[in-house]
Picture 1 (cartoon, rainbow, N blue to C red):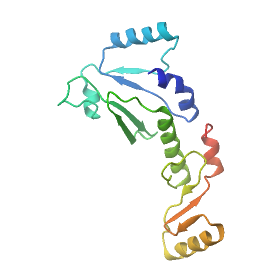
Picture 2 (tube, rainbow, N blue to C red; picture 1 turned 90 degrees about the horizontal axis):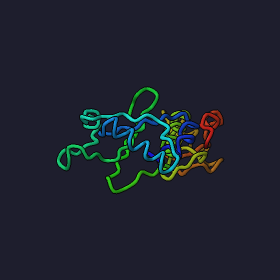
Picture 3 (tube, rainbow, N blue to C red; picture 1 turned 120 degrees about the vertical axis):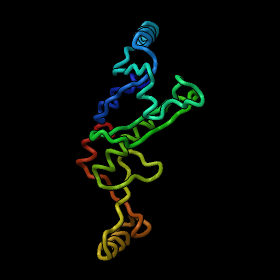
Picture 4 (tube, rainbow, N blue to C red; picture 1 turned 30 degrees about the vertical axis):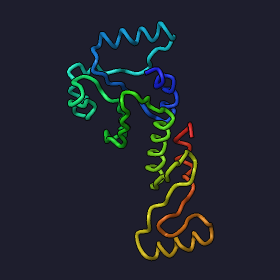
Length: 174
């Protein structure tokens, strides 16, 4: 919670809201949020849902009933503006979440959607995007010719282009 609060500004810059979910009670949330504040001066900056009976956590596969009825795994769900789950990251209890990768993943989804392209392995913001495959043979020939001129790919099925400027501008923290 502390790490996400510290990164909350970066999430807001890329038009992303944070929401916590815990099977602890609201009273427990208040107690540990207050304790965090007293010990660190950090105020948790996003809402946390008290899912006391675990109904939401179970629906999203966050509780492994064969291990525990209340111990959750550390899941991160990236849900788009249409309410569609686009990414699920599952961390075991003994491994912390990696905020830079979560931010990079949100940016990759946003840039891929805005550009109508894909991102390559290890893609970072403002790097070239993978162009979609051609729809017909004429587009394939044009692609091969373009690759020959611009040296922007290895063949018609794997070529790259820079992200559109308007997509970069939407993502102010790129």
